[in-house]
Length: 270
Image (cartoon, rainbow, N blue to C red; front, side, top):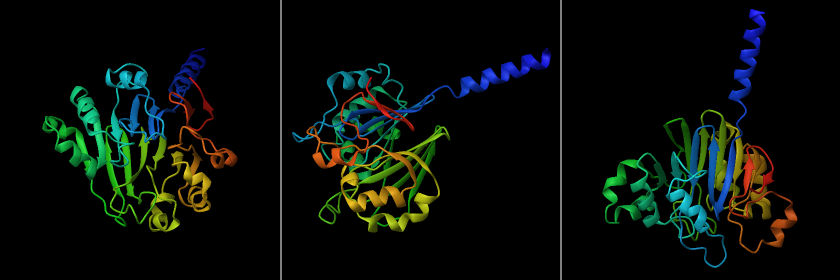
């Protein structure tokens, strides 16, 4: 009887330990929230410009994030892919970090420099980590608070015309459990990815979030299938008017704010 009770208790403990499901929630354009256990991180959540083409983060979601309302509360870290107006707003970032002192910001140096020129930014600089990578540099690794962060600089789409843009690809592992990859506006050219072959192969990514043009270009699909070592991919940066070329691929993509995906799982609406 005693041994039976021990077995029952162990089974109950293990079931509870694994009953949560890691999820990604779409915010708008390339904005995503990742939740795994007690961890929450955001990618590209604050921006003002959709250029009359891309989905802005709705006011109700913005309000919830800024006011620490579930499910957008207790954010551990924010990641910025690059400092373009449809991905980053320095004024919003300052406002958020000032009122959420436990949240960390990891961003390209270009974004941090935009923060630094704002009045009152000095008090939040200790919450920030500036990533300084040149094209071709070795990957950078950061560890803190249960997050393992790996960063690669991959040129912005349109390369070499936008070679000066510090576009970052983040691979983040939460709680040694789930690994996600946010690719920013990466250019779908194999030559950018092959120098980092060993980096991609040394860890399996649960879900990658490439800009949708990786699904609609031959090189982009080869990069996802043969280089990045990912289990699944969900497209982002999808225009409000969804391109027919994307729909024809049959690939998963985010297009509606508050839409969620289980990691790994299928899209569903809240």
